[in-house]
Image: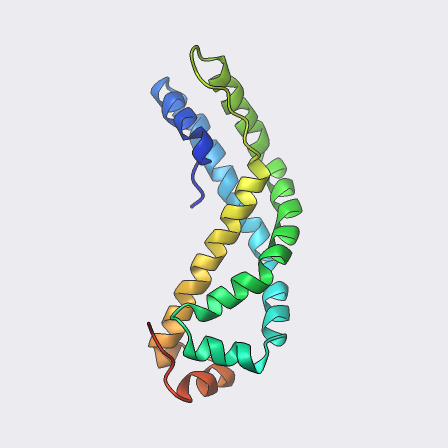
Length: 169
């Protein structure tokens, strides 16, 4: 779940305090729908990184930390994921009116007396949070594959992770 941007979490609290919780909930829902829409673009980017894997990369993943594969993907795909996700997140945010909800929330907040005005980049925030969430899921799946032989559903995974037990540091 993508939360309110940190820069405006005080906006969320104050708007809920003055009875605008339903507007806040609509905004958070639309933010998460935008991230879900963009996630489909990860597969070809991940496949490209996996097919570009070198022998030293593969050995590093096999012998490395418990999240070595995730770190490899993060290192090799983050710029491409950002480039692919950003326009999709923007379109999704617009499609589900998140930018409108956000503008409504921020404009309402900025009218409150004695508050510091805020205006973070919503698309950049949502794009990064979508990517962070994707890597959280990848890391969870990597841990499962390393720990559970039954999760090694392809011949390649079976071969790689049965040949010398990988470190689970």
